[in-house]
Length: 328
Image (cartoon, rainbow, N blue to C red; front, side, top):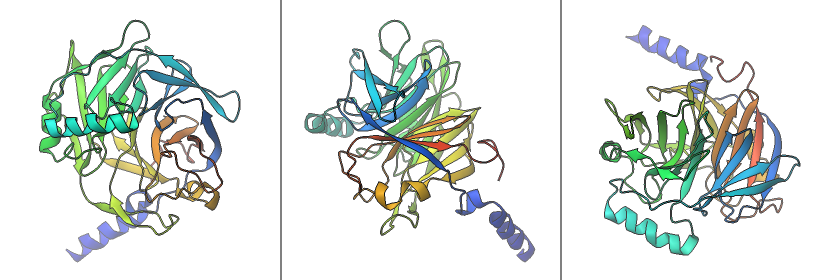
């Protein structure tokens, strides 16, 4: 038994991504964003040859980000969403979301965006636990998702708390499998697949459900133990990548089980003095992974940064040494 315990300890020490000492991503550049009507950048996607953003305050538009200059100009693509479908969320959660929309705007509360190879956008509504498809041609429509998805997620401890529902999504290139990230208390990953016109769970929707707290990185002023969270998802080369806001890291996960394979921190560059916000939580809410690196978008909630910057920010990090598929 002692020999087995010693072997397990040595394995953890040899795998820094699982032991907590993650390699740091290197910041290449940062881009303030202008022209988002509602500000509050909440999602990013690479689609149709461009980088796109959404705001959780805007129900009727996606923004194409012009990368010609360091300051990205947001150019809106406007659409009209149909009424949201019934997803199976309880009345209490839905009524709170409805009430708060009058104060802050964004009744649909779009928190994540993804894109398939045909150029169709997929936007997840946190308020309704529903997914809107904005096609390359034609009118937007809500995916027909079996309500078993919400039932299974809630039975696993997810989607129980206001403002802690689905926070990110990713879709495969074929557009027939989709993953959703539940934000916190409990955080988790859910997968659904298209069966003709309906999106179903198959054997089970829930890949991962995880509770608990974790210390913020030491670069954070007065680090605290915060709830484990997911703030966005990305799919790259068949792997899921989770943006873990309060831990200031990105993790690669198995797309079928949600099991973590490797993580990378971005705390060192994100938390230099000039980039800090007077807010006790991480603000990274949007993630795109590609061969050359990662785009990470910040929702600053209208707050000022230490250097006086008030606009939403998109960071560009270089890919890690050995690429995103490198083993620990």
